[in-house]
Image (tube, rainbow, N blue to C red; front, side):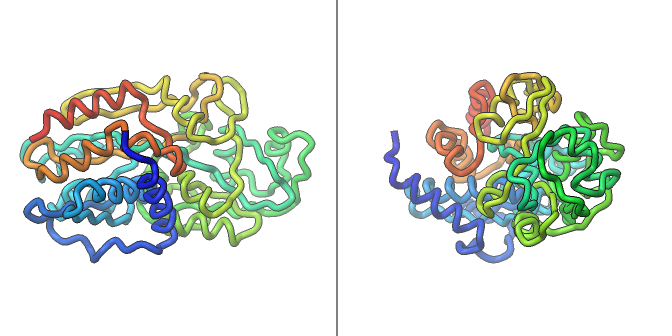
Length: 347
């Protein structure tokens, strides 16, 4: 077992990176001869990537790893164009995107789930220290059919709470975001959201760019509500809602409750890799239903030995063991086993 001090250092560096104190290097160049790993995509997995990078480099001092947190959509475009070795995506690629990825690889691209990140619904309401929301109420808030904090639906979810008569400032991501795709998928499945799931926000509200921008804007805007991965909302010190699950229980967000929700997820192991379909209406006791799964999109063949080694480390016991310290949740063991088998077969 690896000693803890390097992991604790990695945790600290990852948190610093979230606030912009660490350098990621220049804009991604074309993937090179294997002496470096160039990747981009999901902002939600940024803390995990940097902790993994730092610990991996302690074992392989010559390794150069650059990760650009430019969002899932941009990361996939970089990968399609051959500019990166892998992409981080917070959603499973559709048919057209899979075809582009396969075309870039020549022999197929695969999804490798690596990070489970709870999505927090964060709010800024000083007079309300605890807020509970059902999926239907949440969908109505983000759809702007509920516009004030003291609306009857919110009051019904929060009996006895001193809700102010104040307009709700609804925030959403303005950039193409896998977090938006997961959040709108949840609202559609559990809350009757009238819009289709999308990486581009389909509803009303005020747009802000990136996970950092979302967390900072909520922190600075009284009366606001928005969504972001738990890492960013925790780092910003934001209050987050309890979310009602399929059994009618209001569940607080934690790495443990997020992993619990994946017990009912449907696992697919196909030519496109290993993918999970969460059950957003799960009745698992103590399960927080709003979770994001970040995939590393990589070529099944022709990937450099360094990249394969790095991804094998991320899926190892060591790589998964400290994710909860960063605000993530570890992958379920049956999923990890499938991911490791895929990585072992890659050349």
